[in-house]
Length: 146
Image (cartoon, rainbow, N blue to C red):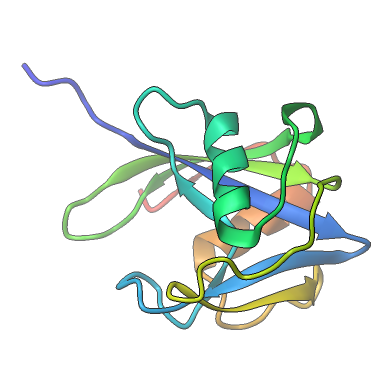
């Protein structure tokens, strides 16, 4: 019997003062035109922290040290797609990094901007909004899409 497969992903909640960094997806085929946060799928043989450090450098050009990552929310999620993908999403808060934030993937991202944590854009991916709000309200775990 084949084992149950869950897709793991890491998400970066980058805060500065009362603002969070969001990126608007473009030309990816998934949630294009909507805001998300820097993120990526954990590759085989990679940890959640290793994934996030890699994605931060690839997507926005910053270097993050493992000691500066703090897990603030875990979401068990059914993506609701036709494939019915089940996922474990781990959200990390980072307030310290090295380098200047820049859009390193303009072919997949058409905007990177800081948004007031209490005034997120309407076109943010719903589960991302939930994770940000859960982090803000110190809710460590949630389930979505079941």
